[in-house]
Image 1: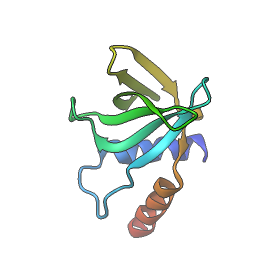
Image 2: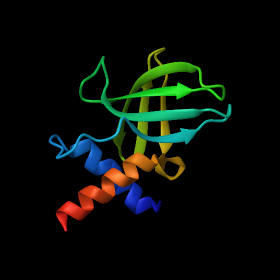
Image 3: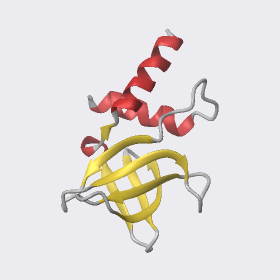
Amino acid sequence: MQTVTKWLAVAVLMVSTAWAKEPPMIFGTIENKAGGHIVFTSRPCPREKDKRFVFIRDEGGRVSSTGCWVYKDKLFWVFWADGDVFTYDLDAFEPSPEFEAHMAEIEGVQS
């Protein structure tokens, strides 16, 4: 998915308050250096309702960390539960097939 399209998908997710159809739970992922994935969800973060829930799924499937994320200034800002804060570039982001289908459906309705 091209960077501009990725950015638009993130913008739609973050600013939309009313969805005609609920978005899929898994928004997309970024591969981490350990061979696992940072998984960005469309669900509100339990601790901070203005952010979304994120977790790390290790290579074997184990969930090793959780946190909250927000997209701002062309970066994913992740606030991990242990207090660490990391930023991730949009170019590393891979939308889930379900989210891509959801965006295509929204684009079809808006046309």
